[in-house]
Image 1 (tube, rainbow, N blue to C red):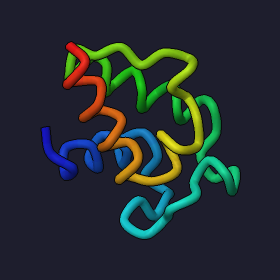
Image 2 (image 1 turned 120 degrees about the vertical axis):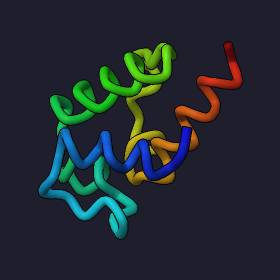
Image 3 (image 1 turned 30 degrees about the vertical axis):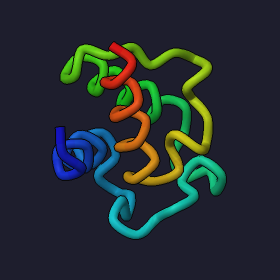
Length: 78
């Protein structure tokens, strides 16, 4: 799993966002719940991890780095 793979998934779901530079996507309302569900679903399918409702927090989805860190943690839990 690489950050580039995560970025590719995020861009497929929300191509209109500046994933490389944004750091407060959820806090600023640029990433809505439908986007998060779509991204989480793709991540769960691709990496065989479980992202729960408790994981849907700004600290996990505000940026590509946050999402990458979330996936990394989930992979380590298994």
